[in-house]
Image (cartoon, rainbow, N blue to C red; front, side):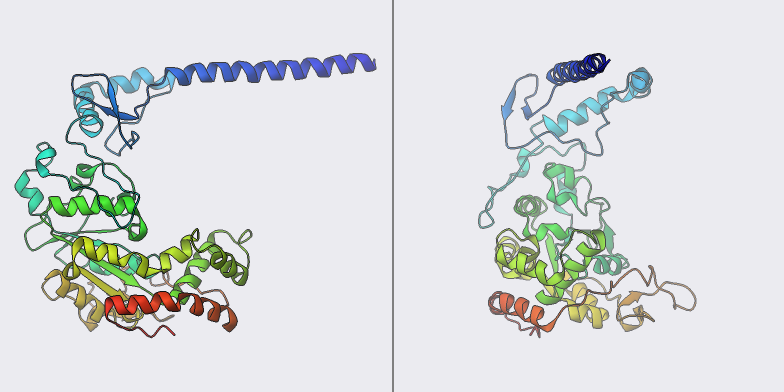
Length: 386
């Protein structure tokens, strides 16, 4: 009887192993037949050339059809658009107009792309490209960029570039971004936010080339914050999404400082490491740096500085904002008869920060002090961050 059980167990194990083996064989076979593009196909030529990019499906490209039950139905639905979709795919991944840019060094820029190398005919004319005003809120994370976006979109001369908030950190190609910028009049500005762009080398290269193509009409906005407070806010956000695995803030601070070159939190807060590169790229006159405390306490003054930076007609004033009943944050008033309600949820901003000891604050202050001093000297300003 015992021998029968042993034989049965071995049979089950054998069948299981056979099933796994067959699955892997068929899986590899299918994968080997998949066509994956790691290069850029030339026109009228099936060969590919090497490049430092991988084919990425954009929102304009139809999703690959894999279901056997719905394949014929979906192919029938898209039959009329086959030629259009094929041309769009070639345009994004094979035509000379699709240009990739990138660099791995923050202190170097790639060779700028000549506009003659790009084909925009299906998107917009050369004149339209050169007339595009673009303002980019480039960071920094946990410094009030979300609120700034909410306020700035209220200005009648600002057009929101919906869908580009994060995509500047992906290498989709130059005209992929340009064709998604809204068409603006001469006195209007297309606006987008990219908080991860501040320290992202690929974003820097892409934005640099876009700036060249639009006739250097790019303006940059940055909001920076007391590094100690930014680190606490950063930890608070991490803690909100991962309450169990994250260590107490004191241990977390020590972990970050013990590995400063790999700590994303510290890198985002060492502002001086990245500002010189941005200033070299677009020039002093095209960058406005705001301080978080000023933006929080007197948002109308900060927004008036933005208006002046962009050459906009005056729109914001102290009466444009309402102080929340709970907390210290302002919100933009609605356009109702009484002008008493906020244009967004007044309780959605301002998490309660975790408790931190004075000793832990001192550790952060001591770490950031030399970086802050270099920043003050570079910007020719001194913030009350001690």
